[in-house]
Image (cartoon, rainbow, N blue to C red; front, side, top):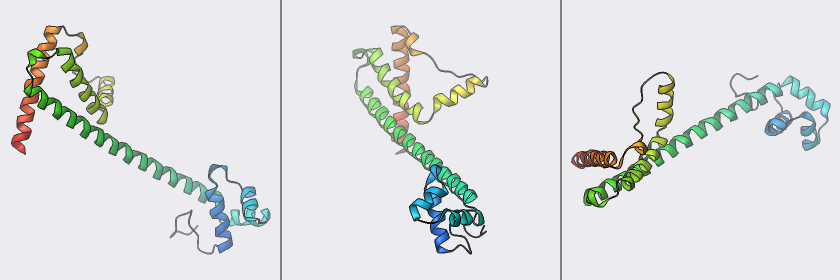
Length: 181
């Protein structure tokens, strides 16, 4: 094979007809065969077998398949990162709106469970966007301690206290972000 060109590209000394036949073979994907190339190009199977051997079609097609798989995985990985970033931005925006609304609401007029549900929803979305639950699961499996309180197990009084604590934390964060802006 040509050390200058990728295996799936035209090789030095490969005729145009042999290259066309290989490209047809390569592009057939996992169902490729010399018989299919012969039928598609109306060429003698014996000529194609000779070209296949002399130009290492099987190895070149395997290299092409590996490269296509690598490109596909890279594309999926990038798409997943883009989606995670977008979801994190949306969750942050929703949290900012919730913080703004909380600053103008009288906590005594809110149901503690309603506020906690909204907050839990935005936190869950953000955690999913950054795969935090997976990271924590890995840490737990490796023996590391993870501090994740179960809000559902709290009494109404404990929820009110937790809500007030979260409200103060959110106000502090909002004030800090406004100061930084």
